[in-house]
Amino acid sequence: MQRPLRRGTVYGTLLNHADALAALGAAVHEAPYKAPPKAPVLYIKPRNTWVDDGDAIVVPADADELEIGATLGLVIGRAACRVSERDALDFVAGYVIVNDVSVPHASYYRPSLRFKARDSFCPIGPFVPRAAVADPGALAIVVAVDGRAVHRAGTAGLIRPVARLLAEVSAFLTLAPGDVLSVGVAAGAPRARAGQRVAIAIDGLGRLENPLVAEAAIA
Image (tube, rainbow, N blue to C red; front, top):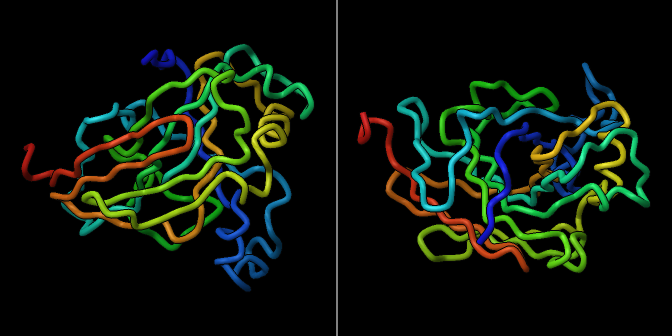
């Protein structure tokens, strides 16, 4: 299947699932933030994190397990700057499955790169053209570990649906062709350890599968 050009930036979005925000409870109203986010909260998954379907996810020596963040990625087809919600999907070339891997951590809003940007922490693929996905706001997402389904979510739970998210992000940031904007991870992201195999399936996009390998095993 055709792959997107990997020339841009991969952006992650925090707290864009209603259940992920609800899981914070009263903490979201405490200092220093004192309220839920009023705009998209973004971070970057840099180039060193990108791997393909079938490639190994490396479990660092200082982590017992990793959090598996299954999410939908929007692949930008043409420069998106201050686009309207109504027209936003016209700027999307297609979609990918993104595994936003993290070292488990308690911080939110501004996650440390040390937890989010280790080598191999962003498997991506396969690419599916926009026309092949009728409604990106109604996609089921299933995570399996060693062949057993351990987490179910979907894009219907997004606080900012796909078009609105893209419109709000492009209001302050120009997205370039090849950039990937992931829409956010639902609450309860499962964890996996070295020696296990993780697969993410999204309706209409197929499957992204990667083994987890201990850092010491590839040194």
